[in-house]
Image (cartoon, rainbow, N blue to C red; front, side, top):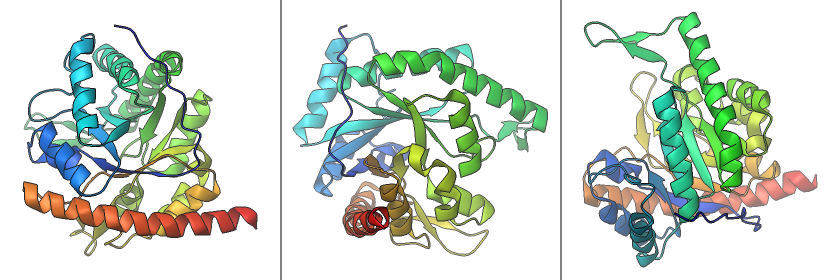
Length: 301
């Protein structure tokens, strides 16, 4: 299969993006997800790794299958610049899987692939989730960094930026993400910031938490939640407790021009997901316009 090298977009504007994940979570097929995202008014789509039919890139060496996927995306008037790989444990299997994901993504014109660090918990003998001890987490971090260091040159050659998204454990906070980013020291490795994570798990203001990695953030999961501590629920971006406009303004002031992704909506059922996806698109358009104005003003000052 021939691989096409794509350059990063030069335009300094956000890419408002709908994720297929809310549809995947409800075991809906990819075509249904694309239809809902396009109808909501998004121009860009972020692809989740799994869909009801099968793994997204089930045969990454088959250019015919990838051409069909690209044609499906284009047929709904969408563009794809971001995909979410999921957990990278750093073992041989997940490293090989991410390598193929990068190659297939490059062929499709995907510029940004997000990964998650290993989970904070492991399964006990009775299948209960048990927090990992510090020694295990340190080993997880070492394997993650080694895998990223191995794959970054290949990602660079493929025109793909790898981004790490926050998750409880070794990469929850902006400071922890910044340490991993600094240890790799590559322009082709960035952060996919998710403001709900640190607020939900630690009660920290994401605008403050973002500061160490604002300049390294090349994608944003525009997530939100509402409720009371211990009973928080996911809601469409812009309709919950988080000040996403302030998060975006901080990113714009740092030079951000990447995908802003409606990644989680907190509902099930195709029609309900469609409605919330449309609300998310409306919120993100309004928030994005305001944030770009605030970010530009902050940059000038």
